[in-house]
Image (cartoon, rainbow, N blue to C red; front, side, top):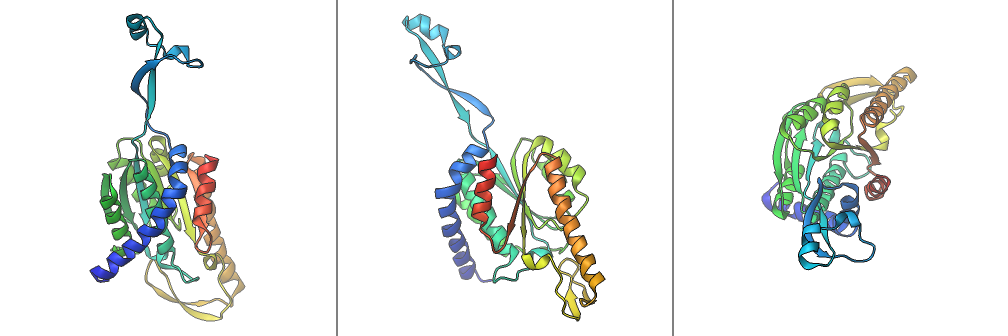
Length: 287
């Protein structure tokens, strides 16, 4: 992709996702994810209904009139976007790849965080850490994140969520709001999620395509494994082959839902042909 085409794509995603974050998400995001606590703002005269526990007795004695301390929420937070860029993210059947929706969701969340003056960091992962961008503020930083989401080429096609969560725990010493965006076609990450979720506020956003759920009966078909690159001859006419595929798929989906729920982390499921806006808003409101 040449620079001109890339910038055009970045701009297109910015226009769409910024509009969403400006009008829809920033308020919901602010309400859903609280700051670290309250910080002192100012002292003002007592008004009827004020909490008497907030009275500043030193100032009250000085002016011979009741004054209260005013506190504001200490808002500044860090958002970490953990994005799966393994081979299976390039799957798509309805004129849109999972990768495109993942990019839009990540960009929308980044702009929502920017609206609240929070820092945003990025971890792109496969079965290794492909790219790490430390948390920073500002529009130009968000645009860099979008650029990487669009054009970064992973070295590996496989997935290892445990490895990514381990890296998160090692690099983020303070509490962060973490969105793991993936199709979660991975296993054995229960323990690392449990450790990471003790420190961080984690949400798993599963992006999937309806065509992945079932294997169609098409007879003998050459199929490419997106994560290994291997081409295999599969007898899709065999009922047991189709049932085995479906079982493996649903086992991984159930593992994702149960593991995230058990660790106290949030769960969002969105299909590529559904509105991720509706799904995310519903999730924010339910928190």
